Length: 506
Image (cartoon, rainbow, N blue to C red; front, side, top):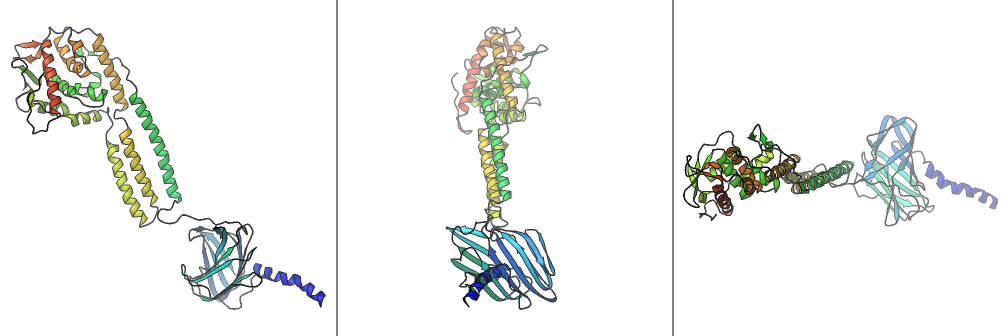
């Protein structure tokens, strides 16, 4: 008897292992017997014996992405009348009449939390027909600390009627009458370090960092770095001192400004802002070009008179200055008003010397679109971080618009040529030609070199200045007028349009 008992020990020990690896065949039609065994490497071996009634079929679909988990199913085999198909993040088993045995290995079923490993698997799910009985066994290298079994529709919290750990450490589950689409979910908690954790979680929620979101953030980072480099290079180039570039002052004996630049452009190109000197130089240029006449009516009393109406040869800002300086047929310096600054800036943008303010408008719009898109995606299809990417792009664009220098490459080149013109005015001998000297005079005032330019031309007459056209005064007498005109524009900048103004002293 003792010898017989010793001989029976191996068979008794092998009985649980046999139950783990090979489930019993179903005793009822349309029922399932499942054997689960978790390996040391964290993989889950699954064997299912399914009884399908004759002349019928059954289908089971196992999703590979569910409850924020990414699963992998491999080593699939089907014994009996049936086959398996993989694709579209799911595995589908098609079974026909008779008993079929399904075998496969699951990766990603083992997770870890607070030092405890948990194995979660749907023993039965995705069946298209009702199951009369579902029975399962679960084996692991260690006896589970705790066991949870849920049965019913997905996301239900109804516990299984029969789920327990027997005296041998084998977990057994039994669920009758499982409706189509319902599931039996088993979760076993194992001691830490029993098996390897293989769970792969995918981000969930509207702000989940999915692959499209990561690609969008990567594109944002690349574009931001490229934009930062471009802004740094532009700012460094703009801050460098200009280099005087030689210019051709005369073209066939006539004055020719670099690239057709006007006296009013000079301050904006050299300093980045419009000053009263630029407006005064513009009025002086209109006088030199016979659009206005300066009448000297007593000491320190000048009147601007319209000589010719504005035509197609004047720019928008010159027209604005013309109208502001002489509202009627004639006006004293006390009536001068500042005007044409916006038109002047727009003209330099049109000529390509200054950057347009498009980015300063685009940035806030992108921020608004980003906020709207974030809210819309958060409450609809998800990917709400795409809206945050757009919002961040708007913020970066707004910052770039403030940091980018206003002068373009063409504007910087013209700045160097204006410095060359300034150097030439300092060195060249003043010609004995009153028309040429007068044409250069507004540029000399804008550049601050009028005194040097007029030093040898004081005896030349100013055909645009005097008590009358027959009594043109010399260029030397125009200095006080230009100084008073500059002061008048400076005073007009600090007045409201409806505020009275008294003449400023020269």
